[in-house]
Length: 258
Image (cartoon, rainbow, N blue to C red; front, side, top):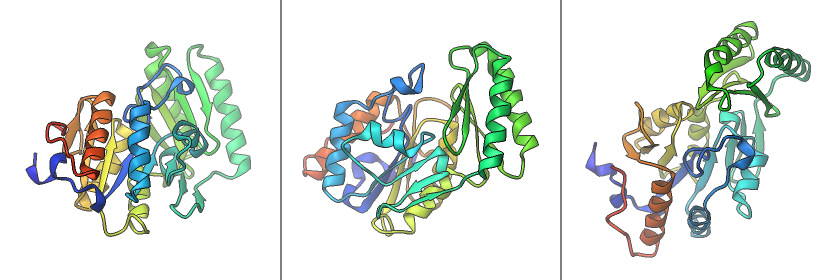
């Protein structure tokens, strides 16, 4: 790993920070509605934002769920893996299926999932998620079902595997491309991008951040495009608190990615 990207040498005021949520800022839970961000992490994000350091969240969740998790913070955000994007100025941009196609896919997916108790279908407004966390033995069933729908609607849908989930998102949605879009705009442009994520869905973001000369940090184990690693969500909290110290000129040299 290159020492030049070591966290202890990051200058937060020259960076733009991007965070995945589930598995990165917050522990993964059996059901999405049980997830919460630790207060210490929220406090660190609030300080970064207050100090004028650009911060955005890049998640598979819809933006309205991100706002609920981050309240009272309202940050620039990308939801549904980039299918939704809210700029720093508050403008929202969406990739979306037409209403008729969306309704048809929803109806057909619900019918298919009904034949497999244990599969859970989540309607995200512009995408769908097939969850099998509560029935891990159905992974291959969920995969085959998702792949069949993406093949059937290949012109408008793309498959996004994740942790115990297969998502069907609008074609063209990508965490990497949405980070690239943010980096073309104020207040992100001209800064060093730093992206933390934990899942397959974050690899496109790592690749773009690496291309832009930034810092990519994988949370947890597994093969990755990221150049650095943090062990856990708890380690992310500690890393964020180290950034707080850095902002106040009291940087903790002992807290850094492995």
